[in-house]
Image (cartoon, rainbow, N blue to C red; front, side, top):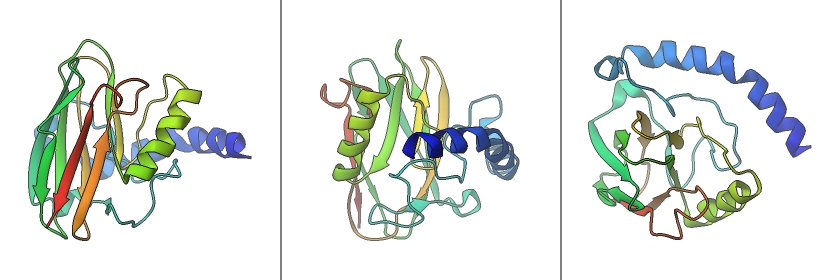
Length: 174
């Protein structure tokens, strides 16, 4: 059943991607010529929920600030510790300056661990959900996320071996 759902969801991906790019194009005018992965509003993963303790997909029109995140082959995010206010909508402008693919996935530690296990079973999985982005070497992209409530929110690169090597970060929501 899960495989059927995934195939069905993937078959609908082009329609969602076109709609999302059209919706996000105005808000992303400063990123022209760059990839806009992760700006889609569809939900293909059990990790992405409409609302959760880690927040929800943000409306690009409500972005209060942009935070640049660098991913590199030292298996690090720079910065790896971020502070935001509860209710704030943030655009993450993400750059992969490495020579291998990297990703940024926002979630609770439990969600990240569960999805990491899925990634082990499906190497090469790429993400275009609201809380996930996979970037090839030298590419850039973005995520827009609203942090709803105070607490700690985790993010990590779930490509097998990357989290274990220390490619993790935290967002403190105050």
